[in-house]
Image 1 (cartoon, helix red, strand yellow):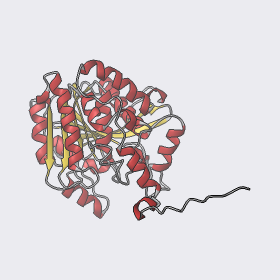
Image 2: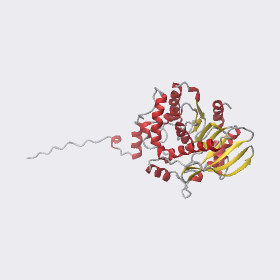
Image 3: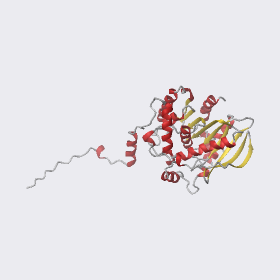
Image 4: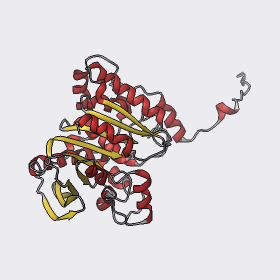
Length: 352
């Protein structure tokens, strides 16, 4: 005879029994991750060599396709206080990047700053152009007319359209225009961040090849806010020809920013959290001059995570005696640029 003994059912607590949404589960998993290649002291140059090689792999940099710049100047106009040149160049075969160069009047071979807009209507914001009501607010309340301010500070300025923004945006996609190109890039082992870094390097090629008689090609700076700040941080980690980097409202731990809330698909790099956090990008940038800009009330790149990245970068810089090459500028408001606070740090480093 078979005797069946059934165990009494045990009931889980309400908390244990709760069915979590997948997003909550993924975030909990991510918060437990410790990046395996994060800089924690030791020989910085040796770490940088290995870290940059790994970062290039993660971004898919070796999958970009080289091409001759094939510069094409569309027009040149005299403005009040500066000359403006509109041009395009080839970043990959058959893919052209539109850009503008602004040269301040009466300044011989000025340093040049490449300006990257984030999720805005396009690079025309950097030129101080207003096409719709919200543009005026973006410029007036957010200091996003990067090129105009740079010229006033005595710098040559270049604005270039980033992939999936402005003139390079899918004209049939009003919102979330980064999604399809970002996902398609992933199918090929590439990333949107990597493509934008590639474009910055190709712009530097253009400066060296075509504009060395107009600007100081040994004094190239890079800045951008939000998505432009993200591209700035990644480019500064890999591109040795950048003398000063000024990422704004972008440098923050992944745990507190893109791993904690909704962000555009263009921010994400497969597997990067297994190896690095954003403070490691700052460490990779050493010994470049570095002005990290954040907003005290920025809700999508919170200040606590931003400070953590800055401190990690500062430890790396200090290990080589370069702690004075790193400055943290904190504005009193939210997700925007803070020109009046940031530019004095630029002048301190660039000697103007």
